[in-house]
Amino acid sequence: MSDAIRLFAEHVSRTRFDALPEAAVRAARIFILDTIGVGLAGTNGPRVAELVEASAAMMGVGPARCWGHRRTLSAPGAAMVNGYQIHNSEFDCVHEAAVIHPVTVCLAAVMAHADRVGGVSGRDLVTAIVLGVDVACHLGVATTTGLRFFRPATAGIFAAAAALGSVMGFDGDRQTALFGHVYGQLCGTMQPHTEGSMLLGLQIGFNARNAVIAADLAHRGIPSIENILQGPFGYFGMIEAEGNLDRVRDDIGKVWRIAEVAHKPFPSGRATHGMLDGFMELRAEHGFSAADVDSAEARIPPLTHHLVGRPVTDDMAVNYARLCGAYVCACALRRGALSIDDFSAAHRRDPETLSLGRRISIVVDDNPDPNALTPVTVSVRLKDGRRLVRTIHAVYGNPAKPMSREAHLDKFRRNFQSTLDPLPASNADRLIEMLDRIEHLDDARRIGDLLVPASRASPGA
Image (tube, rainbow, N blue to C red; front, side, top):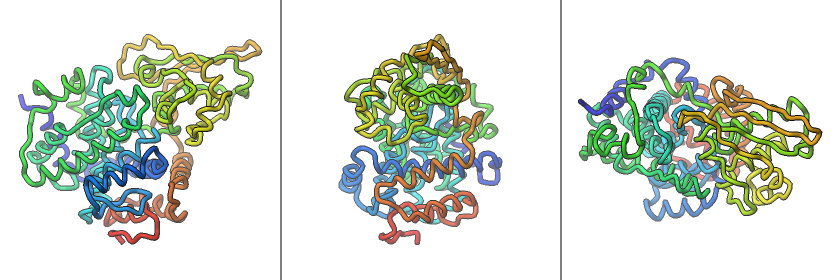
């Protein structure tokens, strides 16, 4: 039997913009803008300047823009930097059923390629992102076991491969070869997640870089391997313990996964969002303050606990804190919101927040689904004896409980304004307008023109 990767390769090579439903195009507009904003906020992430310098030293300079920076790099180098920036604040959109940040690796790679070649239209870009999300999320939904590698990176490189093959016009054979080349280069250990290390976001960057390199190899006709999903050393069995592709086979070309993607309204691991949603709803409904709270509890699925059930400590690194459910919930209970500022050194060491966080118990429920992030049940015991309870089935930001346009544009503007090297304020409005009409855009480099400080001339001008 032919490896199922051929089905995905043919899907990518045959699909054109006109075949996309409006719901998929609309979601692509929204999440390209959202991802750009998150990538600009990521200029404030750990060791970004050092990464830019290292990328220049390793891979040289070139025409590809690093978002929020004056420096230009080679396409692989810029893809690595932008991929890291998009994920380093844990603010990038997510497909909950697949447990993947599906646009992150994909957009970083395609925008870097678009910078170096020119002529990638808005229609091309939308088609590429929709197809990339499709491939990665189908792989995630087909998986029947829990995480053992960092799926946003390992599946994310397949999203980037699909997107790059789409804009490069690969036929089914060459697309299959490209998938083989990325399979040989993917990475994504969960150890950085466990330790709260910036290497987690770097792995997103590594996979964006490697996808661009893989596309160059396939473009030049360098052969790779074919049985990368179902072979004896294929993706299902090696990277994911088990998968059932029959779960998605009939969905290819019919179910457009980008329409299922969720916003992340908070800059923390998505596995924290159900807890945050529940506690913030209780706080808003009942009007209590953090000073009124005696203790709190969150009952969450096993995957959620594995991802964010870590204890509050006095010396949490920023990456650890973003993935600490008790800490982020303490922030939300104190202030009624969670923002990037909550991960500053001062806030991470605030005695009152840490004390409240230690009074929040994170308990595993009996959910049998190894990839479930919901439902989540939170409870608050107040000092007056009342016990308030809320169960969250659909988390804020999910298409079933979406952010309004006003809310997601406010998120974008706040992220845009937080760019370390400030960009012209008018660029935010221009980006929103450009993305709203992206199918009329002649060259995706015009997006990149608005993502770098104005003092440097850009190749797309």
